[in-house]
Image (cartoon, rainbow, N blue to C red; front, side, top):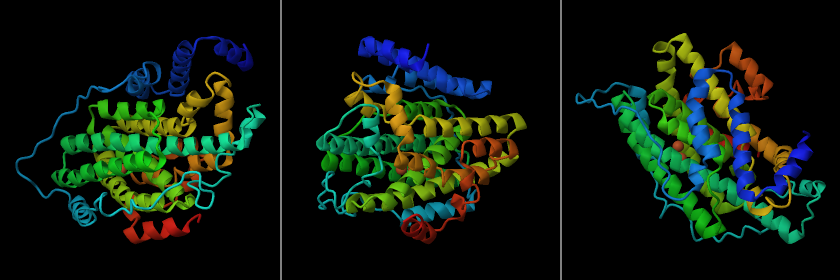
Length: 399
Ligand SMILES: [Fe+2]
Ligand SMILES: [Fe+2]
């Protein structure tokens, strides 16, 4: 059956049935990309909960089982000087989301003088190629909704980070890591606060969590192994977020969002640095070759999931579910110049960190190369970045 015929059959089905079927097909597509049975075992239960059952969209609360052990140490060792130093830096760098952010700045998401994103970022004209005529008002509305969708995913990612940081603080075997982790929990709470406030007070629109982002968060918070939580959150999700925040910081001309992103980026850089410190030694010294291969493959699958599947489906469902095939929407998102560049540039922080923690042997470099992501391989890893360098790169690279 050709895709066009499939689309036509899908359009004839009631929306609920169609969404459920599309979820199943998507889940099979995503999971069949993995050849490693251990990676499959890790992602399938989360894939079922996220893509098929859509747990995160079925009202409050979403309950995820978690099976990690809480690691206590009553001797309070000074067991990781670099983490202790990171803890000191984090204490000095705390800020208050109420008083340190200029919330009095008024934001107009339709202001063409200070656009949140450049006009050509989404190339909404491409939708017209799919025979979806848009009035100027509808184009503005769509751009505004896509911005709200993207920032909503940042918000939901931050909630995932808040919970994962708390779990990691419980499970990590380094005492200095627990002290450092306590600052990350506060940081993530503050990030939830600022993105939530920006979305509610300034944009007035919040989207539900994207199913694929949910799958990753579900997989890492339900995994019993502390290093998989670290890898999932501190390296993958936070690393991608750091790249995405940096790209958005350089693109936006809206001053309040720019300010918020700058503060958040400085915190996130410490979080990723912590992940690199914790995992580099562990991967080198404590894992078998098989265990290491599993982590290499898992990281690659998650990277692809984020790059290939982050398609603003929730915006499609709001505006076009009854009038346009989902495949046409995904074509628009995947070909839109700004979004394609964004989905690549967000790997600029992640790839050097994967190299630094030892998850980029030749076999993986070939895969990343085929995915077009090796251009970031020689970049600075999180432990090589100072606060000054992060800020100067933000204001100069790609500006
Ligand atoms: Fe965060
Ligand atoms: Fe973080």
